[in-house]
Amino acid sequence: MSQARRAFEKLEFEWTIKTLRSSTCQAYRFTVAAFFIFQYNVIARLDDIANFSIPDLTPNTEFNFALNSKMCWSKNVLEERDSPEQIIFGARDPNYCAQLGLAIHLDTVIEAGNVHAEGTLFGVKKTYCSTVLRDIVDDAEFPKVKPGNLGSHSNRTFPDTYARREGCSRDYIDLRGRWKGNKEIVDTGR
Image (tube, rainbow, N blue to C red; front, top):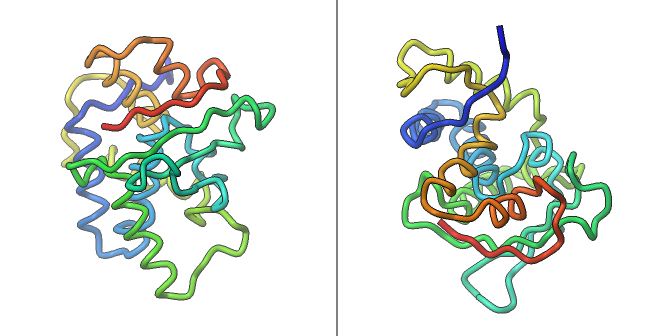
């Protein structure tokens, strides 16, 4: 039997974020929720986000309401120059707003004095987030929209699939998600 993972559907992603945010575990509510929202926005793998360095998130000089993100560590990025800068805009929907998720996560971490010594933005391991996600999608209450296996890659392919359904070009999505290692600046917001 194939272990291939299908993309999340909108309802499934939103359920995941709402489940995390309603948890009694502070790490789930603030860090893991922000982790998955950021992953959605930059179309990244879990390990890309787990290794995302704090200095790789900078203010955008052209749009003072946006951030720049540069994925310098990635399975598909062999050299730093192969990683495009991405502009991270805010979103009206808190389930998709990377800026809101990051603000809450960072405020919580800084207030608790838990700034990550290793310099990663989220300070959590890929395996931890993968286990949390597996627990959510395996729960009997999870609203599985259609058949197919779900896993950590489902959140990487969801924004790709969603953008294609909304009319974005394959080339543009490949660039933003580093599917082909392009080098241009990408500036999509939700």
